[in-house]
Image 1 (cartoon, rainbow, N blue to C red):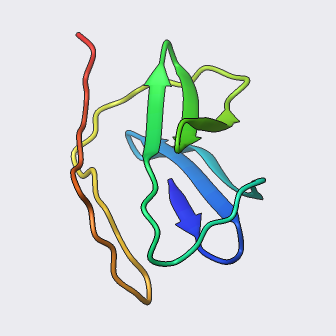
Image 2: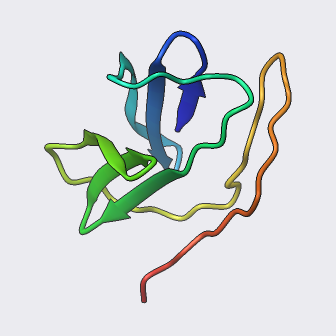
Length: 93
């Protein structure tokens, strides 16, 4: 999941086991600004992909996708810097 400041866009991507299932960039009805904190949540639950920004759902897949095996979860910043108060990864057993 990627936020684009000033463009008010988000990218949602789900890739598992080298298969890219979702890669979509779209406008959202919220102002994304530099220097402001956002809570980003990305989940795969029962095969459905959902993405939230500050508690507002911005994406929900219509189709179910496999979760796969993740070996390289990562965070990246292009042309800037990011600060994180905390990062949590939850796995439901």
